[in-house]
Length: 474
Image (cartoon, rainbow, N blue to C red; front, side):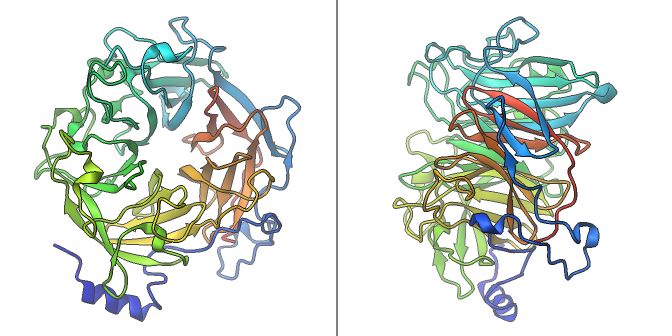
């Protein structure tokens, strides 16, 4: 049933132009002087009371890899071309989206995407073509599974191979990883032997379950970025990183009677369920063509969902199947995270390719119960990305067990991991001292003691530990 626009407008007016219909909202401060602001916890959430925001200034790394606050340390877990898989082959390059899982006997399992586009000949360290785990033998990408044991030892093995441009993805409620291809080459393009642009499931607990990988065609074929699953209703929400025209946020509604579980998505018919794109409108009921139109924190849009005509994009790319005025778009729809009963969704930046106001990052919260998108984070255009202190280009995100979000930066100039409090204040956690590569795959261990993240190029996974503490709401 479409969301009733009159009811939405009435509720929006009652709450002050849509502020606070859902969740906590706040503007991310990008100025360096905002990074050490005192906590002003007037609402009684006192676990952070009296603490300064964040963990202090970042200390240059004598090893030239990762700058961290005083008291924090890091350890390199895998490094492309240096560490080895169980097979003796080198760790693949271009680390990207990552998730953690609790394994047996205290083992932490991590599934790590490798964003490798095009034929294998382009790459020095592609994902090895492990027998039985290959989708397209011409493609260089895939996932590895990393086991971090209590004694500090590490093992790594292939979860899936022969996929293309494995960028982000998402952890499922049943304990598997959905890896997304951010590339939609057809068989015959760029040396590929099969169609690409799909989502695949990887099980870190059961190697046998990953044999004979099959795409989840019901989720559509396009330049996938990330995916989350609504554990209550079973809907999947997926982002598309694309331009000309800008990409879309998608919702997949499962067929009646379908029950999620390990391996069940791959059993779906190619046209199972319904794939949909959003059509947003403001508090006055006016259509919103692009999320870059929002210029105020707390902006709330109602959301209707429009069916995708041809999800496999046999002749026309999915995002091009809609005429002007039919759906709402956004530039560089990137990371997602399911928490607080909804989906946090990143739009990394907007420039001339977007019709609204330029920005250097948004984070939206989709509330499936109210069917609303609320702007929770807005980064203004960074005037000088070469200077350390300001943040731009949010990409992968995760919810912190210590409050708020942790965000991997994929912007211009200096790259950071940074935190954002519940009220939107920001603070640095790490800085890439090695090169200008983006951070990816930011995620906490199941026990919350370790923050894992990747430097995408050349491909380095690090584990960060230290005096984590509850952050003030800011």
